[in-house]
Length: 314
Image (tube, rainbow, N blue to C red; front, side, top):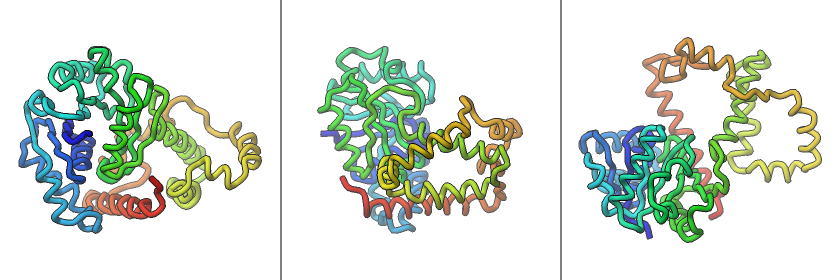
């Protein structure tokens, strides 16, 4: 059973991963160059909204902080751990070297995981021993990790069903919904679905079919309204596969099938309009209003997380 966790890296994703494990009582070592005081303050800041929304109590917040121990020495952080997940920069060599070091430091039973979004597991594990490769997987989280309930788990043939089940049980313990990914493909599952939706949404705006706010409204109160509780296969079954087939034959031929990012979005990036972090993207954000906008965004996700717990069947 996995009891001792190590998280490598304390950026946006690493911090959220550490918080998620610690929030459910697990013993977490967090490797970072940041001070323990800074980390504790960041956890308190990140999770305060969960207290305000009555998702956790103030006592649970303090327990979460207490469950995280900060390390500046990577070897010391991982040497007695059952499960180590890296959130180091998205660079193949850095990840290969990280796993190579972990292989020499960690016990034989330790399971290694990567939170990569783009890099193949087969490449990342090239510098570790054959036996360790049987205990390596991708465990891909979504941002913000402490709120988003999905984690994608690779099952590409290098690990046994027993190892997979051990990791799956770990994520069930922290109330995550897991997606079992059977084939090594770029983007795994959820990100590919998301990009398919984004491609058509951006294209509709570029063509002048509708303004950004109306495209968003069409998604939020149309397909996404159902998708929050009902998967695509269920939607198709309830609507009738014959109807969906006709719609596909009629619409897909006239929809965007571009193989790269949308030109409109590329132009915005060129102009430095990157979204809320620069004050403008598809929408404009006044600097003084950004903290409140970010908080409202997190609140919406928390409300959806609460609602999802009523219909999820384990």
